[in-house]
Every structure is written in structure tokens, then in C-alpha cells.
Image (cartoon, rainbow, N blue to C red; front, side, top):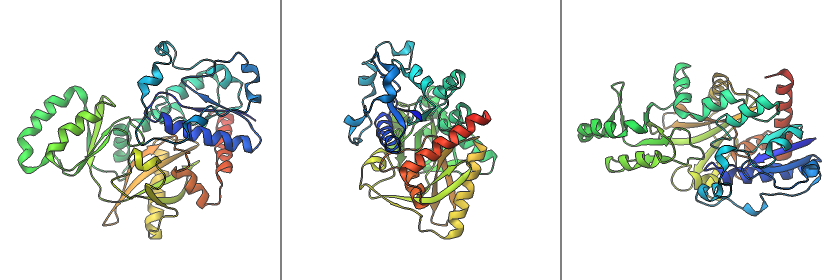
Length: 366
């Protein structure tokens, strides 16, 4: 089968995407497929695209590992000064049109916000992951949170704030500093500690834990560097979990326990930074509850193919769904492959199952 593994791009998760893409590419090559790894932004400059599926080259091999800091995207953009006229790199679309399926190894902006998916739909290109509508719903954490609330999926209490309203908000809340609570438009309040996160970020980039008043303004301004809107929500102290869902069915629950701090960019991708246990060592009824909510979130957000839901569980055993990931990481430390392995599905087989599901969906026209 001719398969394009699409990775890279210009999101803050570029390096993560290239690591995922490289691993997917090698797994598919080992299973006999005519796979090619393409950077969606840099493309392929060669004049032999008609023979590209015969090549055996991992263009992401030089990445090697993911650094502790997110990449310098401005450096990447400088390699294509005219990129705003056409986001796709040279020959990307034509090569994808020649493939039987495109394996979406993209993460973050443009990979998970639905824009590329919408473009591929118009061009008749089959791809893995969910469609453009559900991609957009999930990428906007504030909107996804509102949908969770409407459908009674437990989620941390919080609200959205736009960048242009920041100064007015800071002025309004100043009078409430004495009781160390942040006022909400609805009249409620979120006590410290709380969480500030960029509305459309990924890999915990633009996420800040705020413990005291002095940190709050700075956290908001930092989060606004990544997006024009942020989500401010209650901090759930407890244990962190994730649940992958494939074609509407939940995989085993995995627990994530960072050795230091929270599950941020560094702890996600640096080997040895986090202890991951799958299946999670929790009571069976709690595991089933989490899986049930994961499947419900998958349905409510209109997801297709596969996805991953993140959860917290507090000391009282209450479960909270944080968000949905439409293109879960496929790096050596990623969670979804570990959950699949717990069900006896090795990495290469997982990749093929994702592809088979995407092809079935394309055949049904959905």
C-alpha cells in the first residue's frame, strides 16, 4: 500500500510530530508498505516525485530525540519566506494524492485544528484521524469544555478569557485579591491553585499552574503568547490518567505520574521523566467509569477513527475529563501505543489498525 506519513509543520509540537512520524514510517516500512515520510511544511524538492514511493529515506532521522524545550518555529518559517501564500511545502499535495492513505503524524496547530483535514476532504485525499469538524471542536479547549458541561461529562470548573479583555479583567479582579479568589462572570469563584492554559495549545505548551496571586497576571500574559484566548479552570489535585479510544471503544486506562512537577512538555517526551502504568492500578469500577466517560466524550465531540482523552482523579475518587486529543502522540514515550500494547497490539499492528479504520470510514463516506 502507498502511504504518506505526514509530519512536521510549524506548530510548537513540530519535534514531537517528527518523532511520531519517523516511528510510524519505520513501522510501516517494516510491514512491507511503500511508505514515505513528508514534512507538511518543507515538502520534497526533488523532481522525481513519480518514484518517491520507491525510496527508502527517513527525512526526520536527524531529529533523533525531542529536546526539553519546544522548537524555534520562526527558524523553520524562515526557510520558506513565502509560506503564507501556500502552507503546504513543495509537492506535498501531489504526493498525497498519489497515496492510498495519508497517516496524519501531525500535532498541534494546523495538524489538529481541522484545516488540513478540510483541504484533504475537498481533494479526495483519504487520511487517518478524525474529520475537520471534530478536529476544530477538540482543538478549542474552551468549546470542548462547554460541550462536556452540556452533556454532563465531568470536567473542571472554569471559563474562557479573550486577550483583548485581559486588562479590563485584571482591573475588575483587583478588588478581590484580599480573599485570594478569582471572580467569574457567572458569579462563582476559582480559588488558588488554578490552571491557565492557551485555548488551542498542545503538549502542555502554554499551560501554567498558578499557586498564588503574584503569579497569576504573568501566567495569563505567558499563555496569551500562544493564543488569543485562554481557559482558566480549577486545579484538580490528584492522579492523572489517559484513555485511548479506537472506533468508539475505550482502551485500557493508563496512569501518568511525573517524577517532578506536572505532565508538561518536558515530562511528556523526556524518557525517564514520568512513570506510566498500564493498566492503571485503580479499582475496576473507577477504570470502567473513566472508560465510559472517554467513550461518551468521543461521541459528543463527533470523533472518528481514534483519539485520546485525558483525566484527573481527586483524593475522593471523583473523575474529571480535561480534554480530547485528536491525533495522539506516537513517539517512543507516547501513551496510546502503551495502552494498545496492554491489549496485546504491538506498535506496527496499531498503525495498520488505524489505517484500516480510516479506509473503512472513507469507503462509507464519513
